[in-house]
Length: 344
Image (tube, rainbow, N blue to C red; front, side, top):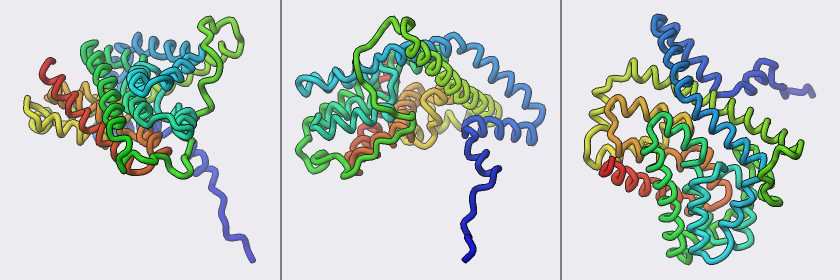
């Protein structure tokens, strides 16, 4: 019998290897050139200018992450899951909101902790806070949306982690949170995860060739990561400012009432590009009339429910626990939006 299976064509193989963010960037610019050629150079100019404006913050973010990776600072995170449960929740929320390690990056560690009986409450606190803020995110958010917004988002990230952790602890014996793990948790992830948290941090990493190599690799990887997402986001921002009527944004997401904040949370999940890419998007929306409260609810809801963060949770726990995770995100985003609207 003839073999009817077909191997992928070389073109298909090469296409699969193309980074989707770079591909989207090129396709958008081609579309602008075809549909409105006079706008192509202004779009590129806007993007380059925005990248130049945020370059100091981007460079700080790149080298900060490289340093933390090279030193092995993620081992400190293990201390958040030691001691009394209330202490665990507090430290998990703080480290989740301040550390540079995303949820999917620590899946093996989280899976091991849950398997040996670590409280879901502390894990939930970390999961909710970690996608929202880290040193790189703080730097880029400060450079684009202002230091006050970045600080408020950090407080909201830690607050959301604390809320989710303590509510989960309170209802730990309820049907929702009892026996939370899947039968065969998946420990793959979006960040190329490996077994972390071994040994102690080495702060003077430059004395060891292997750690110097880690610093170089982490800096290059994160530099390209930030460049592609921010370039894509700034191109989208330029297009939004040019073609999306400001009156439409203001009529839907503007104003001082509860409705814009609620809509910001509901729209945040499907519209979220990426934690870093969302910053220019929010900047464009604010310029077009989005309310401050809606902007905050947008970044909180979108950050927690974006695909990388959500997949990390879905991979390990049962759907009912995942539903609680998303519910915490929506409620926390709404409350953060209300608070920021009141003080901004």
